[in-house]
Length: 172
Image (cartoon, rainbow, N blue to C red):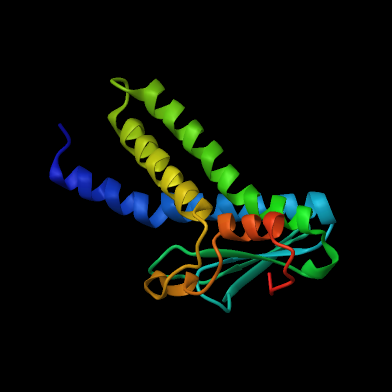
């Protein structure tokens, strides 16, 4: 049984390190797919805009700004040059990355069960968070106002569905 102080420590570690890391990896799934499919430069924004810490790694520009809620976005430099199918795959790449991370974290949790309580707690927590990211980002919706920085944005699932099923040229 874990003590209360250890539980608080792991909860803070999860919120301050693991959730932002999983969010960054989700956004990198979008970015890497965009680069592979289109060759374009991509911006990965973590936290609210504008980023106060900026750097470039290959074709990815990283913009970071501390935020109470771990939010992330990706932007292609010229999305109009991409096909609808490319844009759909790019939209799906983030959730698929989260699903893969969930499976890896769950496997690590299973492997560490009864061996290392700390690793088990962190990896099982990460697996649940990655699963929640997958489910939430794949739900076909426009994020509601209470979602803060995400409010009004299309989820990845909604964007990919719109791109594949609709003939409309509404702003993507």
